[in-house]
Image (cartoon, rainbow, N blue to C red):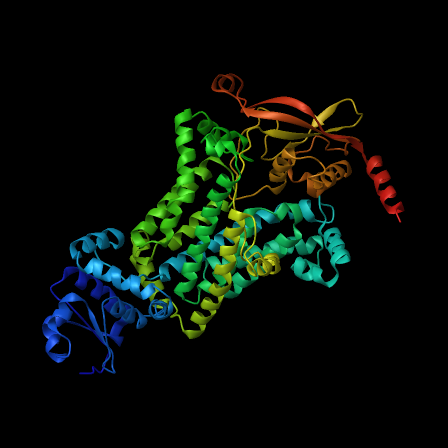
Length: 609
């Protein structure tokens, strides 16, 4: 007998069968009829009763009968976004055989299957929906954009303005001279059109406004497109001050977010793939670097006081007992290299992965100032949950409202998301491969190199090598070459009594670059020459990046930079002196220079043929 509607017949006396049928019924709606064999067997006399008891049976409209694993995947073919399982069953070598063996194994152990199913998916399996997840993510992601652009707005002129440390006009001109027309692809930026100070500042204001539009759910997709293009413009033109991994992560997330409003579950999976890559690569680089502190689990004995900008709680964390710090180091590696694989598991294990990553990020956030980085990583973990899980936290009215307004993933949205996956997943695999074996996969390496300027698939991996000392650059100025006064930065360590501060979600980019510069030489950090020159000139936009200017009436005649070794003070010293740090002079980092020195150097450069 050929049914008018595809029909799945199951054992109505089997609890685990009823469990899964309830889930499939929710997925397929009226596209498939589900009937227990106890009442349907008479309508299909061609199927022996023993077959009904052995496995589920799927009868198509043309009368074709499929059983066991094949029937399972055929049901999914009639649900939105899950037809790929049937394609794999039909075309991937070995997939059908493994599936049928697994089905037979589980069918003979239904009690075990029922227990495992409830452990992995919960007491009731529901179709996973992501309308609330997507809505909440986009709103909060808009707030991250707001923080990023606002942070840029208060420092952009001092960093890359016309009187800044690395003027963007000089940079773009040099790239155009060296690379010709290809410069526009290598440095994709709106500032090719106008790189004036007014344009740089206006761009940050526009970014804040667009971010707020996303937050209040007005013209979200056009705003997300504008935000991506605008932030890419700053990252491309920002040189050393926009070269951080969180800038790359923000752009990669921002690119994916543009497609999230289409409603395709493929995009949800792409976000999970991004979380996996980011966390896993962070663990891989730690092991592959050969750094002894990660291998012997002593990394956290150094991390809290050597990281770029510690929080006040970092001082207390550094006082923890050695065994606890080693346990924390081990836990970090276990999460980044082990728990991260649970991202691809069923919902409860996936939620466990989210909890592990969230806990790690919270501890990092409490002890280190990493601007919006940890906040963005924690926000990405929302994709490891579904609406049912999120609905326990957010009001029921919000959940029902987002469900009613959620777009259905039509053919166009699904096709676009699939095309996106065909590009981003292989490139992501290449990034992981590149990190692990230090070479690119054939073809994919060339594609990754070509698309690298867009920052849509990036390498990640912080603290591959743990710094075990803390060199700090202290810049001084003098009016006579005899009496020297220290320039104090807003957030990085300077005076010993200066307090350790919170600055999340702001990123003081000059303070961060000073940390990197101290780990290398002037030759490795040529931008610091521009900083010294601007201090001699008394550039207002650069001085605004600092906490105080010791030369308020006139710029100094000379500047220099000394190198110190900093460490957290111990409990007794801090209690008596209120000093967070102790320091020891290591030597000269940047020699004494004056305006005349820079003018002579410029004249010599211009005299070259």
